[in-house]
Length: 170
Image 1 (cartoon, rainbow, N blue to C red):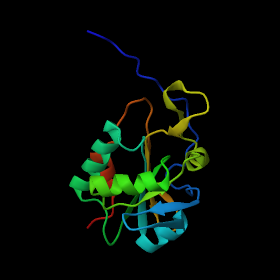
Image 2 (image 1 turned 90 degrees about the vertical axis):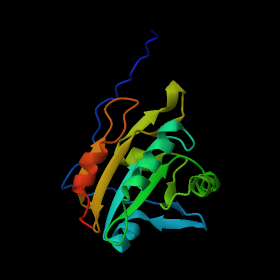
Image 3 (image 1 turned 30 degrees about the vertical axis):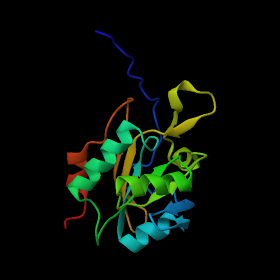
Image 4 (image 1 turned 45 degrees about the horizontal axis):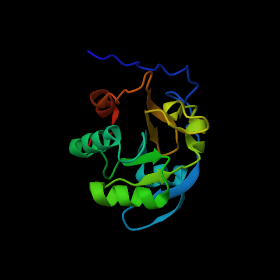
């Protein structure tokens, strides 16, 4: 039986419960359009936001995660769900269309948002190529972190049941 390494991530100084999540402005992509939107504006408009940092579009992990989130019915009047990935806006738009995602995605090709959150992951050991390590942050409308989960190893999926228990009650 073949074995493979499960890389451990180095320690992270990511935002934790009670701290303020870093604000950022990036193109927010939907099926219809994209435009620069501050995360603080998104969270304030929604009342609370679940910020999902995920691996490359089209990979098995990304497809599984977004299907799981959709099947659980996260989001609604009291919670905005939004992803952050390194793909260009046009690729995010195609990903949203083909996967039937109801959630917008921030486009962050330079991975600067992950840097601000201290969750950068070197993509397959390629020099200078990074993506966000898997992470989920639940913030209120003022960007105070109410729940944070950041992967310790690759590959690791979010703890969906634990996250769901923290979401605003519908």
